[in-house]
Image: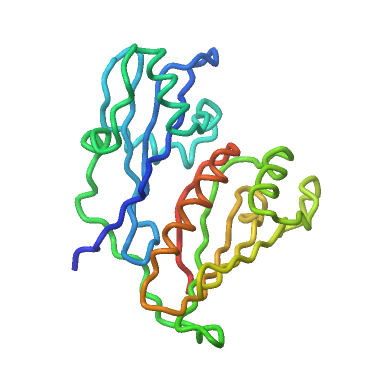
Length: 234
């Protein structure tokens, strides 16, 4: 059965630098999401000064997650930042996101998300409880941790300089009758970072889940980390 896909409301942008550290192009990308907001694929488009046109760059987006050398040459930016640089490069407005998506590659058959065979009971008082992990590649800096702590009003409970510390902070939020909690933690023996997000839902709609996952991904990405995937565990 084909997987019903959801799309983020906004793309993620990166400036790509050449070997000398000078900007040479832009990368725009997005996760393809299953109906439950977990990730089932990644697509992207790129523009370079040398080619002067947008083209499919989905392979580059996927390589960015596993190639530290390539990650060292990209800087996450907002759409406004990408638009400013694009205008400097070619004197034109950055195409809107619908136009950019037309150059993205298409996954021929997006895989179905993992089947959750052993769902735990929902938290008492809620209809459903879900747990997601947003995985990031890269190194979180002290400044980045401070920025996230301020944005989320998150007390930093761990020492970033201590490799043995796993959880750096926890945040709890109430949205209407739904409750959300996320932990910022080291994963993969400190080689990556994750946000473990628990969603306690009361009603039949889960729109707030997608909005929150996208917002958290964007906030961490702008601190220099590269989102790898969004997995659902529960």
